[in-house]
Length: 137
Image 1 (cartoon, rainbow, N blue to C red):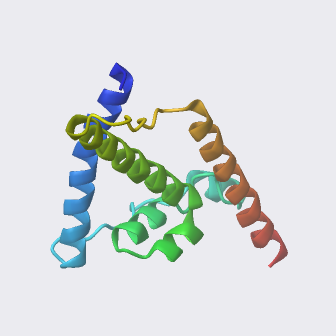
Image 2 (image 1 turned 60 degrees about the vertical axis):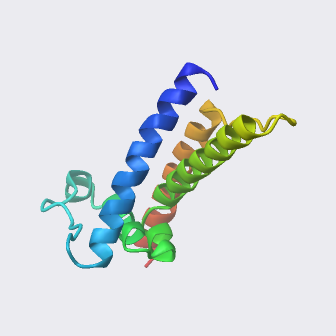
């Protein structure tokens, strides 16, 4: 595991525990994620959705355990969460497997720029679809 992967991994573990705690607190009603109190400026000016519209709703839905709802609000949130958990799971498994066994080493998952490009593609795809639905409905 190179230095950048170690940094991503450690920050990912910290973020994972923070997100798990937030989700547990929300599930028990001790903490409630709410929407930001101001509307989208892009939508106010143009009347169309911006590429980020639905992101906060998607994060709140995902934290509440509503995966399908999160996907419909903004698919890149679910994509990012899936990549994040796959990265943590794969690298944790490789760490313990490679440390405990003398057998063939499991490869770690490395950060790839392609993951960012896929995310950007999803952002623009959902932006186009949401605005086409807005126009033709």
